[in-house]
Image (cartoon, rainbow, N blue to C red; front, side, top):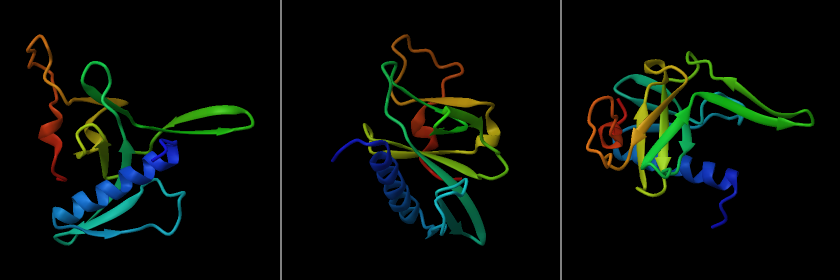
Length: 137
């Protein structure tokens, strides 16, 4: 498979759909590509708007997500912080672990980092292990 940005995004959404289905959610799809979320999950009489991100492990053994959107046009590349009232959950699909991790963007400021690998110095304070974020809340 080519690793074009769109292909990565499509793979992340597919993996999120399967993972959420296996957690007992009904998956709903927005009719437009211009929504602030990629899919909606429904379970226990509650809807969750979910933004999916394909995130690879970096050289420190972590995955980081920035709560912003970006786009390019004739004037260059632009970035804008997301409206956290438009999204209920972020789902991070990590190809190295082939797993999805879920978090509420309202619980964080501009970004969050999850550790996929334990720190080499065995630090535990202020470390968010990705394995603790495997289930959609």
